[in-house]
Length: 464
Image (cartoon, rainbow, N blue to C red; front, side, top):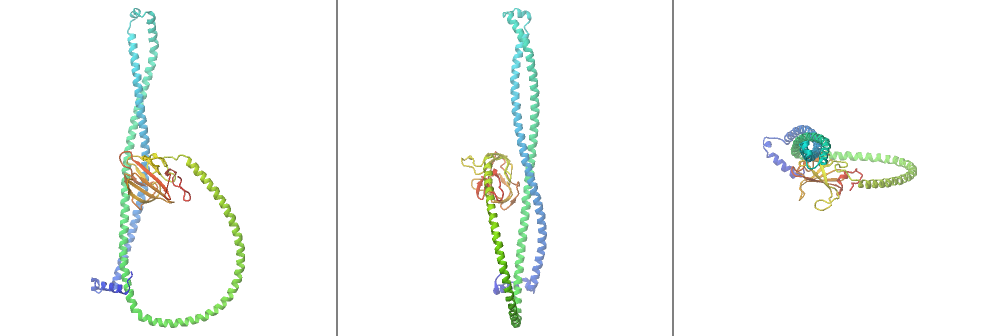
């Protein structure tokens, strides 16, 4: 606290005008009282620190549980997608089998009707028919050959009906499993939402307590500093006269001491010059030896530098060849090297392809599940969270080694600017209706790179 004598007088006048000084409270008593309050506040600060540590531990436990639940939810989403695909295939198979059995049934029904009509003709009537004996014999032979074939087709039809019944039973079982998986997924998403809300409440509570303690401690420290400065100035004025006399006596003693030191210094200087001459001769010998060793060291370093340059050149050539080979391989659509895909779903637009507006995409577009969880692709700090122009809800995460992630298409964001997030930690939800798309863009030192190539090593470069 600054201010000089004028400030001290003003502060003294204010203190003397207070009710405390009206009751004859001295500055020392006021300072003692403020310091007691500071000590009490330190005890409260210690209790709050212990409480904060406990809350932080609970927050860390919650974060670990949230990450685990998010991983389980993603696994359940994958299982549910597989169950739905299997269900679709079984429904198609059931429809195909039903159509095939209906056609077979109609053919057998027509053939049975013809055979029944032929079997009802008595032998006498057959002999008297106008077709003649040859036609009658041909009809009898046809009847004899058709009956075994008809029996075989009837047996095949019975087997097909059995398989159709089995397919329908399997279909019904698959439907029950799919319904159970959907119910479990909804429960998991509800648990995840509760944990996220609890995490935010703990973070807000911890931050509010820290701000209150800091403000209170700053106010008490300012009061104590003002009182100490006032008391120091008053005490300095009382000591001024005694210090002047003591200063004169000290100056006399200092002059005598300096004279003694001067004589002693002259003696030591003579001894120093003699020792310096001998030291100079020794250092000259050491300098010549050091120059010889330095020349040898420079020669060795030059050779080592040439060898290192050759090795670095070979390593650079190998790295370029590896990057070129990696660029030729099609990346896995469901993974990110060194991190995680923000959401579960199908990649509909890849890096470098044309998006729905006809522009070249600088990231990837994922068709995610309605209400699906969005996680951090890698650990980092939230730099921006909220709506931005025409892009809707977006999130920008700063990672290590110059990487930034831009994620757009949220239905809800569950984090805030300045928050640290871990790899795979939930940061929001997709919209709950329709077929939502999530846009994921990865940048290295401000330049867009292929997100599916992932995060490189600290010394490496991002791959495009």
